[in-house]
Image 1 (cartoon, rainbow, N blue to C red):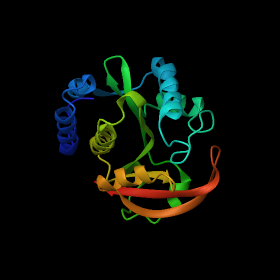
Image 2: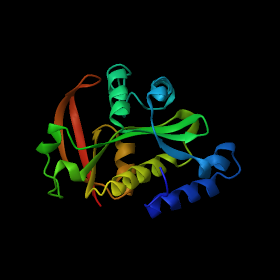
Image 3: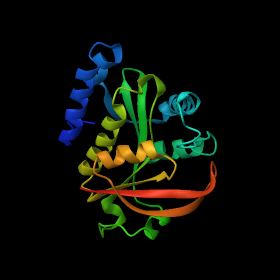
Image 4: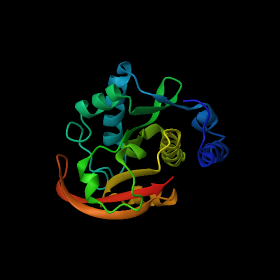
Length: 204
């Protein structure tokens, strides 16, 4: 993706490398790269999300992801086809993945955002995850910073996301990176039924 513009992302990568320098993954952190997913990556991404759901502690209580309901094959393929899907790679392995899109969801128009900007000036983060073998190395922090970096590169004025009200670990992560709570909506989702979603925003 080229040189990282977000200085915090650079600092977090160096910090993670130093903290875990005695481990195999720690030694490879600085060489990891965020790349745009291609159609050939679909099966690897699908398997990676299934692995996250199967092996990540607390998934049933936090993200409440159920593969085939959220995320789905169609969702991942759509993000890939639109050029919005990104993979954090460690060689040929997936360390993490996320989609970073323009703001297109009408639901987001129901929130009172601080930044009064057009949808074209907003990036939205979706289905961010770190694969199980790479959890515990600070890569969640790195990926949030890289999502911010992508939004900055696209000259956005705001980056936004939503999260289940039950996903308190994610709320802490986002707030640590300067995201602020903007509102709550009770919405229907295939994997949860009717439930509360929290919405967050960071000014850029």
